Image (tube, rainbow, N blue to C red):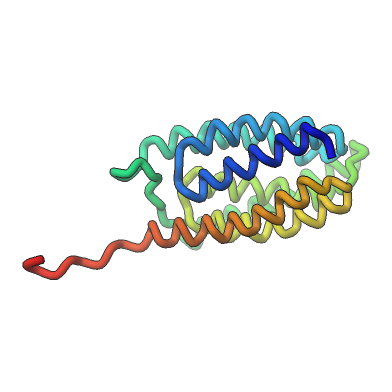
Length: 193
């Protein structure tokens, strides 16, 4: 455990919590966490995860601008539907990306877990894209990814990060509940009330 890992974990948890609450303030917090975690993952030779943090930073900026254009009266993001055929295509893209990145990492680096790291990286990009696009399904994908990340980080003795990702599972479930409730239209009011 390093102070850098602890700081990155705390900022990441705060950023996800704010995102689950559909708050714009989650974006600058998440951006800072990406920078800190890029260094943590480089030190652990989890190169795909380090690259992922840089890509996440790009998605954080993208999401920040997208969300700003889709706020309700209480300044919370409005949830958008995800068509099923688009979801399957994007998941297939994540799988193909994982295979390509895993092949490259396996053949060209001393990556500790090239295949798992690459697959989780690519599916994380899909989940982050869905979140930036305001799709409820992002939370289901995050739940699955975060469960697998717990095992990966525990295997590298990144205990704080493994604990963080276990917490992310709970936050993803919380985010799904919050976003699902926000995506259900209110019942019409009876006439004359």
